[in-house]
Amino acid sequence: MVHIQYMMLIVSSVGVVARASTASTTPPVQMSIQELSDNESNITEPHLPIKTAFLPNQKRLTEQSMSQNLRTMEYAVRGKVVIAADLINQELNEQKQQPQNDDKDEDEEKKKYPFDHIVYTNIGNPHSVGQKPLTWPRQVMALSDLPDSNGIHHKLVKKMFPKDAIERAELIKKALSGHGTGAYTHSQGPLLFRKEICEFIEQRDGFVSGSCDPETIFLTNGASSGIDMILNCLIADSSCGVMIPIPQYPIYSATIDQYGGQKVSYYLDENSGWGMNLEELERSLAEAKSQGIKVNSFVLINPGNPTGQVLSKKNIQNVVKFCSKHNLVLLADEVYQENVYDENAEFYSCRKAAFDTGLTQEDAIELISFHSTSKGLFGECGRRGGYMELVGIDSAVKDQLY
Image (cartoon, rainbow, N blue to C red; front, side, top):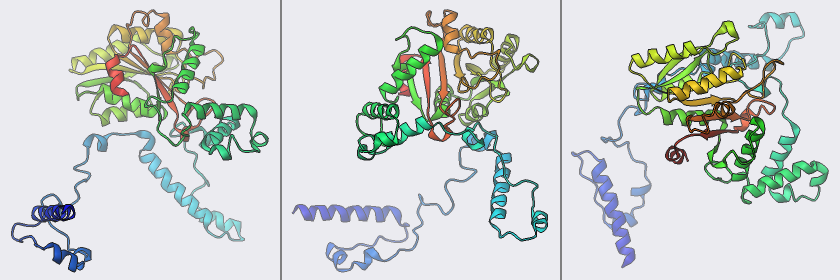
């Protein structure tokens, strides 16, 4: 009885679908359970395309119907120049695969370009331009990825890997609750990793142990995904504006366009080594407000990208005070903090500046800092490791990000 009711339910459902998906001029084919079982060809034979209201003849997703914010945004690091470079690179590779003649002069004449390879410098991609990966981190990652029997518990592991790499991999596996690197973790990242990031921040800025809360740390898929997440959060509608430096790394202008926000440009002072000018910041903000833009945030890139400058302590303190004064959320892009090559310059974080000016203690600053393993000593762009720290951010907003 149950079997019959179940079959009736299936047939009824098929009938409903048939009635909904056929034209009104063509009555649905009705078939009994017996006919259905006796004539399997009715199921297995291919059917002609069915024209319905919800299966249009043309593509649903086209360049005209897609998000126009996405279509018109410009992300310079992946724009026309890069596309042209990819095509030339493909030609060069095809040329290398062609058989070589004994006459080298003839081969040279056939070459279309006076070079044999392209160096991509449109993005910070250290390993692609010759930086070698550090051995120890790769050893730790290998042991972390391997099953225990082939890695940390292998009988020859101590002959193949150094002791400290084995110990570190064991700690990582423990932090991952024994599930390995292939399993999902806490949405903000494993607690042990977040605690260690806090220790890094405390040591970098000279804070007392425990002053950084791991609950304010979010591990991200590189700094870029964190930046995207926060800009998505900030741009509530098309009237929202974000102050960005010029020159700037184009992820900011592109993402603001993607989410339909307003770019509010402020210009770095080239004559002072691409430094910060408070008068320029006030001008930019006032002009945006006069146009009806609701400026709610400020992007600072330090050390600069692409300018490479390292802002002075005074510059950074002026920026945190400016953001506090105008109630702007400060986005501190600090991914190049290890790449300081000027002997007279020293990286000074926005978090440290907010503390030194008393803004943190008074809860008078909203600050989100970004860092990454793509730069600095590691240069592991392809590994997609990064974090963001939230300081003074409303707990309800933090919960939404979580």
